Image: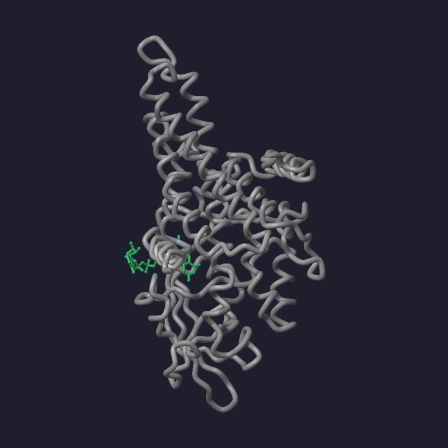
Length: 381
Ligand SMILES: Cc1cc2nc3c(=O)[nH]c(=O)nc-3n(C[C@H](O)[C@H](O)[C@H](O)COP(=O)(O)OP(=O)(O)OC[C@H]3O[C@@H](n4cnc5c(N)ncnc54)[C@H](O)[C@@H]3O)c2cc1C
């Protein structure tokens, strides 16, 4: 088994590091995070240098790469202290490029090329979190128009996205497998109200409540096939989880490196704290977790690239990486002592941000639910 990266991958990561050094130093991230501002200039730089278009088919102006390379990029971004919730254009827009109409694809790409998202994802509702099938937003037809009514919650990017990919149900359909459809809802349409939901971290993008009251859209705003909303949604979930895991793995390495450097420098009781075995033990277990995370992310990416099902492995990887990254970053904070808890140190931001990864994209418990069933199925006979 060859664990080396290819020369192209090494060069890609090197130029990414240079770009981040130049366009997104720690002061830039801190300033945007503190002021809850979207890092537009960095996102534009990522796009101008081709990173945001990686994984997007050439016919849409992107550069096709394998999933492993995309994960390496996501990991490296996070390793440099930049949150990966900002990255992942290729995966985020994949659904639209697969299922969208020509008009919807053109709108999506117009924004993607500027480093922006054309749409936010409108799935979660107050009563429909892990249980997506409980969603109550409806679409109804009258006089040739379509009307959306409902309440979405936790919608990341709702305030700055011109559209929402909105899952809604047909109240006249009783068969659950045909009930749900995706719609491309303009966020400036009359009847759309957006209210930011203050949250603990991920400050550079707002997460919002979205109220939809008789929002009038057209038949052309249907995304994909009517009644196939869930099938379309599931298609991308596995890869989104893998991307999230790669980000966790990178963020853990970022905190680990900060903590290990600090352990060499910080003197207490007349010696560097790194000489204390309790600190060494922490660093050792942090290193093991990081190694495991990387192996899981790379192997799952390799499986995906080779056409092997990642239903089980992406759930296991997401679960392990989200939990372990939080543990590693928490230990890094412990090694840094009081400084780690101040907002002056990036580990405190990583700590706040990473906690969300055990909830967003499917909670830890839902990953167990998916993995547990898949494991049992493997041994059913
Ligand atoms: C930062 C952030 C960004 C988000 N962005 C978006 C977005 O852009 N678009 C969007 O649509 N959604 C988004 N979400 C919503 C996210 O997908 C949901 O929060 C998540 O699916 C969990 O739903 P919930 O919060 O309603 O928790 P619930 O589903 O109510 O879960 C509460 C608790 O019960 C547990 N639980 C639920 N069911 C089971 C079960 N069967 N077995 C065992 N335990 C169970 C859960 O694991 C959890 O611990 C975001 C969430 C966060 C935190």
